[in-house]
Length: 350
Image 1 (cartoon, rainbow, N blue to C red):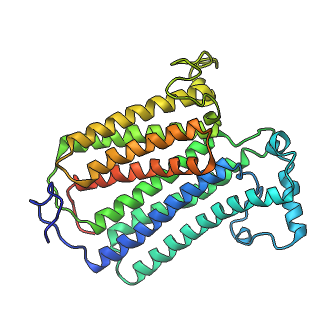
Image 2 (image 1 turned 90 degrees about the vertical axis):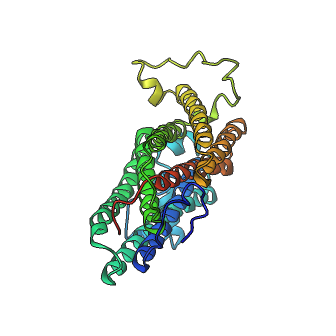
Image 3 (image 1 turned 120 degrees about the vertical axis):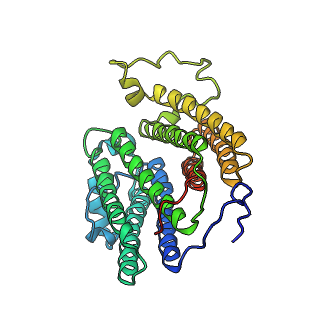
């Protein structure tokens, strides 16, 4: 088979077998579902819907409220939260239903991902399409999915107190697990569906690994921005209140708490990391201009993502734009994983 990518045309490739293709497409579907889950999660956060369901019922929670009495009971539970006491005094039952449905969709979609993963795993295993060497890693991935569900509840539970929001630390852990699961699903799917016989290329691969590490830090810094509502302040660019470094940047003591608990510091760090990530992406694009589409995708998506971030800030975080910004970050991670895959030779067949 001839590969149209000029950087790979000299290297032979093989088409995936039926078993590899089936497993790869299943994992790609699961990755797409996790992508949607992350975007819905961003909307849930932006609409402050996360505390609207104060019970963890993995089985019975599949059904939404079916009576007015049940709606009133759940609304009464929500009215006990610090979030409602601080910000929701004017909310009626209709407003509560709006935020409830976002959180309900988020949880239901998570259950559906688990069902698709578990069902696909069993079917592929029983029909002999799932190779033995993949069983252990995929079982571990399923366990991580279960841990992610628990972590989501653990995050939500942090708001069932005098706090007016969930813990930013738990939110970032929740985001970290989601990104790790997505990356593992996408990487494994690409290795199965696109078995490229590339030469080992140490320099560019190391550069990509460094870029992915930088991107991960940038994405997680965005989690702290979201968790601290730091996008609601200093809605100007490039300066913050007319200064490069605002006066309240280092106000928390000890000093290390600023990055984790000071909204001003969280926003400044995210701005800086985003611009460094953009510069790194453009360098990769230039350095890999003869290596085909993946490197161009990194540069183009990075430009789009920074543009979305600036627009989100200037417009004071409209929900639709904040969700697009979250999606853009995951797309950039996807492009980097795609490029890394293209530079990584196969060590065995699935």
